[in-house]
Amino acid sequence: MTDSPPPSDLPKTAKSAAFVLFRPVFFAAAAIGVTLGTLVLLPRNQPLPTDLQTAEAPASAAVSTPLELPAPDSPPPVTAAEFQGFQMMKPADPQAATTEAPASDRYELTLRLEKGDTIEKMLADIDVPEADRKQIDEKMNALLKKRRLAVGETITLQMQTLADQPDAPRVLSLSVRPQPEREFLITRKDDGSYNGEEKVYKVNPRIVRVEGTRHGSLQQSGVSAGAPSGAMIEFIRALSYDVDFQRELKEGMKFTVLLEQLVTSDGKITHPGRLLAGQLILGKRIVTIIRYRPAGGADGFWTPQGESVVRSFLRTPMDASHITSGFGWREHPILGYSAMHTGIDFGAPMGTPILAAGNGKVVMAGFNGGYGLYVKLQHTTDIGTGYGHMSRLGPGIKPGVMVRQNQVIGFVGATGMATGPHLHYEFYRGGHPVNPLTQKASMRAALGGKDLAQFRVLSQRYLQQMKSAPHPADITAEAKPAASSRKTPAQEASGGE
Ligand SMILES: [Zn+2]
Picture: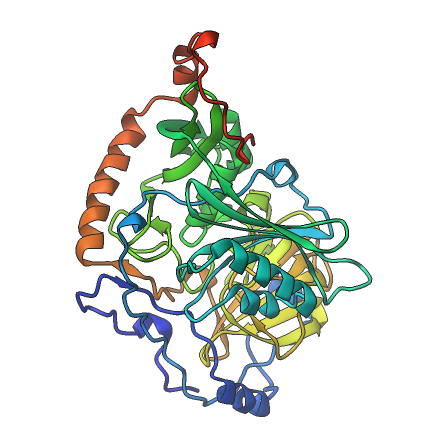
C-alpha cells in the first residue's frame, strides 16, 4: 500500500545535538490533493466489529503519496534563564475540577506551539474567526513585546461554541505560562473585545508530596488526598500517552505526586501546587513522569530515561480524567475487546469531548452505518484513526480540514449500534484496523548532552523527594507564623483551586 516507513521505524537521531524534537507529520499541501483524489471505497471482507454488525468497514485510503518525513528541529538558542524545573499550571478553573460531564458549549483546549507556528495560525486551525484572532494576536504581541514563545510551549484555551455559530468557536481565554512566575493571559470581555494582562507571581517555592490510592476517578482520588485538581489533570494528561486508564488502572492502585507550592513570606499559599513529578503504580509496572525544561525548549514531562512522554498519538483519545473507569472492560468481555472487535471502546459520559489522537486531516465526518456519527482522520499515508458513536461533531470538523493533536473533533454519544454512550476508537495501518494499544508510533523527543546530564540530577532529586518530601497539610500546620509577622501582602495569583 505504501512503501513509506511507519513513524516507529524512523531513525532515531543519534546525533549529539541536545534536544531533538520530531515534528508531528502533516501532509504536504501537494500530497493532500493526491490523497483526496485517490481515496477509494474498497469492499472489505474483514470481520466486523461485534457491536457494529451492520456497519460497513470505513473506507481505506488507497494512497501512494510519499510520506513527508518529519524534520528534526535544530537545537534552539540557549538562554541562562531557561533552565527551570517547572512550568505552567492551568489557571484556576473550578468547573473543570469538579464536573464530570462538561458543559455542552464550553471546553478547554491545550495545544502545543509547533515549529514555525504562531498563535494566530493555531487559532486559524481551530476555526476561530479572523477578527478575534487578530485581536488576540495583537494583545499577545503587546504582552510579549519582543520575546518569543518557545516551540512546544503549551497554550491553554477556554473555548465556547454557540449553537447558532457551530463553525466559529469563541476563545473565552488564552493563557501561556513560560515561567512559573509569569503568565500571559488574554480574556474575552462581555463586549467581544479582548483584554491582555501579564500576571506576575511573587512567591517562594516549597516542595510537598501527596500520596493517594485510586478510588473511583484518579483525579478525584488525588484531590481527596490533598493534591490540587489542576495538578491531577496535568498528571493524568502526562500519563495518558502511556497508560490505558480503562484497562490498566484498577481500584486501590497507588500514586504519588510531587508538587511545588508557591508561598508568600508570611506563609500564604498563592499556588496550591504545580506538578513537578509523579508516579503511578500499575501492579508491576511503575510509570514515572518528571517535569523538565530543556535549554531553549518548552517545558514538558519526561520519562526517567529522558524521553518525552509526548507521542505522535494519544493512547486515550479523550481527556482521561473524564473516563468513567470500569465501563467497557470486564463487564462486557464479548462487546468489549474480543478478537472480532476492530477497535477499543472507551466509556465516558455523554458529551465528553473526543480529541484528535494526532495531527492529521479529516477524511470522513458524518453518519456511517453502525458506527453512527463517525470521524476518520488520516495522519500519515500509513496511519489513520476512526471515532464512532459521536453525539455531534466538533467545531469546524468536516472532510478536508487539518486537525491538531488534542483538538476536539466530536463529543461522546450513542449513535449507530451502541448500547450506551462510549467512544469506539480505531487505529488503521495501511488501511487495516489494528489494536491501538499495541502501536508503537512513538517519534518521541529525547534529551541529550548537557540537558540529559542536568535532567538526570533533577530526576534523581525528584525521585528521592517523592519518598521524603512532607505532605502539604503537615507543613501548613507547623509553619503558620504569628499573625504580626506579616510583611508583604500576598501577590494575588490565580491559585486557589
Ligand atoms: Zn466498539
